[in-house]
Length: 137
Image (cartoon, rainbow, N blue to C red; front, side, top):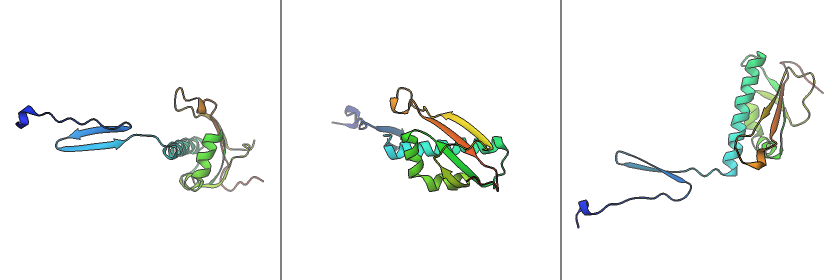
């Protein structure tokens, strides 16, 4: 047998994507674990919080108090990544209590990222940010 008579093919395992370029082959695991989902939720929350900071006219260095009210799946992600969330948003405080009426800016956001995924059908997030120097309680 010669090389012209043989054809070699590769079929990736489930949850893997195969990419080939030149003489290189890359197999990438694309399975979404619960840890990856939670990290994704937190990164999306950070993006939305930063947008709210911008809309409220906060300076990049302003420290905030952050109030997030969400369902169990999102609250679990917030609890797991609290330090990261606070660091990235410059939050002095992060509370899952009711949003105070005196908040500088609030937003009710739908977190329905996955169509057809019933677990997140009722996921809503309320974000409130308090101006610098203000303190509730």
